[in-house]
Image (cartoon, rainbow, N blue to C red; front, side, top):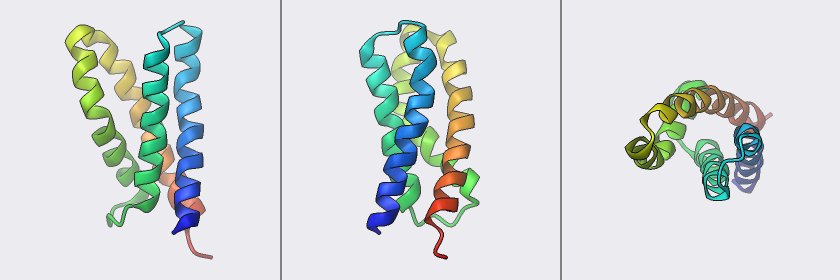
Length: 108
């Protein structure tokens, strides 16, 4: 179980870095960057340790969008147009994270 946790946290951190790179380039506030990064670390943890019996890509999507939902509500309240790129990034990174967590945590 420890192995799954570390893999999920590491892959989540990698996904978080991929997500915040364009945010840093756009000079978005640091609270947005920290929020996005931490969401991916938490999503990686949940994806790698979850016992949901779903195709890994769908498990990654489901958990990522569940983690995103509270923040997306707050973001869409102020800037509704910014939710679309966030949802697209979550679609890509969530499915990739689901696949990667499954691939690297499989018992060999």
